[in-house]
Image (cartoon, rainbow, N blue to C red; front, side, top):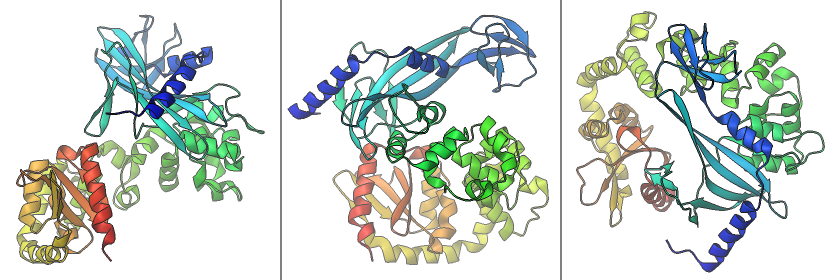
Length: 459
């Protein structure tokens, strides 16, 4: 990758500034607090990995307890091997109302009853309240199919520009870095996963919503302050009555968790956390009780809702829990799908073919990739088998014109599945490789160009 002289000078200028910056004791403690310590459980006895003290606990695996000897917070585990990644940021002042965000990865590893930590600064970016001016990353960061990892073995760092760096995790800001007349925005950055640019924007604009939420000690909600109004009663602002405030503060709930709390009205943070990660929870709650869903440990919401749809088509009794919560969801889903398929294949295939004839002009290719719409159920079944996904369940939606399914392939391997793409209203809504993994940057660029040059020009 060629880097121009001007860009090299900018990178050198940023790095020189950062290298002269003395990391504060408070930041070092902030990093220390992000490390995960494990408590090894043997029945009800727990071994603190930090001080090797043994004590009894009433808590369960994956819950947190406190070592009575060293007061360390411990994640309870049975396994002697554990691996966890966290991402945090460090906000330092730069110039002309600009800041540098330093991106860190914290790796916590348990091996042979010893905790190992690897902390790496992998990226830097200049931000203001209105924009992100530039990114640079070090050569320890590697892209793999849209994800990235840090290569710890390399001894030297070479910084280069990058079009994107993840702004994720909590962010530490020294006292005085961000100033506000009424409150210290550092409390939000230290206690919530934030979009730094939006927080800076809110501070520079003196947005009252930041002050309101921070003073209420709702730090995660403050990081999403744009969703809230400033006037009205508590229930008008938060969608629940004021009796929930203490619960919201104690658990520092996120905006997703608040939306879930509005739906279920139950003060159980484990339940709220679990339900907040489920897709289309509102529809799920039409059929399932919250604790039944929690105990069922549903992992694939799309598959489950398709299964419910099949049950309704076949007029199954969804009040029967053995039907509502099948032991083997994937098997039962496919079983019901096949029953319906016997009756509907001919009509559905006819409608899918008609849809194909209307949109086949959207086929597009370059020297490496080609993308084209599906024209039959058989093609979708084949795609599902190759990709290990549930695209075959979309046949009814395609036939009814609710969405379109496209197959992206290599030009020289047109029979081999590569990327499955769902389009609604001429916009890409899903793009997945095998096993529902994310697409690579190169694949993303091809699909973005196809969407811009072909789909967006359709009247």
